[in-house]
Image (cartoon, rainbow, N blue to C red; front, top):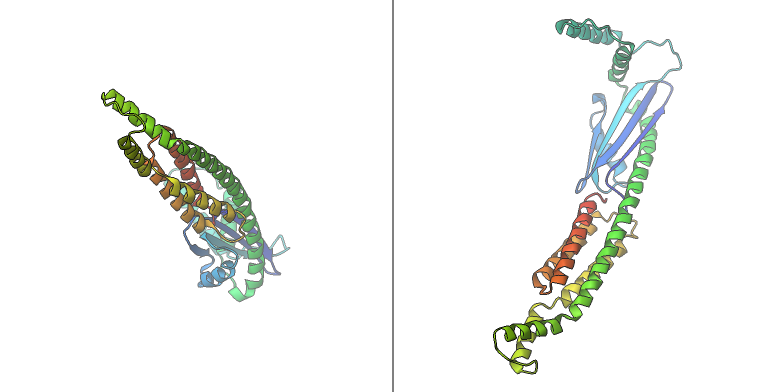
Length: 291
């Protein structure tokens, strides 16, 4: 089980350029890939999507590529001094406009230099493609690892809550075994209160008990819930994306619990149904995070 949320970063360089990649994702019913890269590399989304699809099935994926120059020469100047001058001048004008006499700090100046370096005209995609995919591989490794770790935590919660649902199901089955005798006792008690003395052997009593028992029979629903829980548990060991399957199974479980709740004639069963639906709702919330 993998989560749909994750983050990873990577970097690579060659003799002239340094490239950073960040990948992060949030929940999405399908797979959507958005690529943020220098404008000179337009049209990368199809290529990057093709690279990611064999490894990621669901989620809204954002891939950011940033390019810079690589050099061991500490004295090398930034790519565009004129752009640095323009931004510093604009900043000074803004300070004067708002009556601030604060000096431009070294930190702010460094950020301007870094931004100008990053925003300088990017090289051709073919020139940096090799290091781009090297950085992508590194970012993807961390991204998938985080998804896997988060998925393991989700799996633990699914197992715990599914176990609770099994316990509730067993309790309801036990309560349901006493349903017919309780119907009979309740009916006779009501008849006595109405001064209608009928004993349990009376045919009319037997027919009414049979009618009440049939109307509140939840045997089929209990059997289907048992089957759905088994399907849920079996999916936990799958190595394939199971998010949509989980959502379908949980939807069917919700339907069956609702039916039992509407049929239940015993207060104890109704209380257990409410408890089960609370656990089920928590699972449905978590299933939205599963790939």
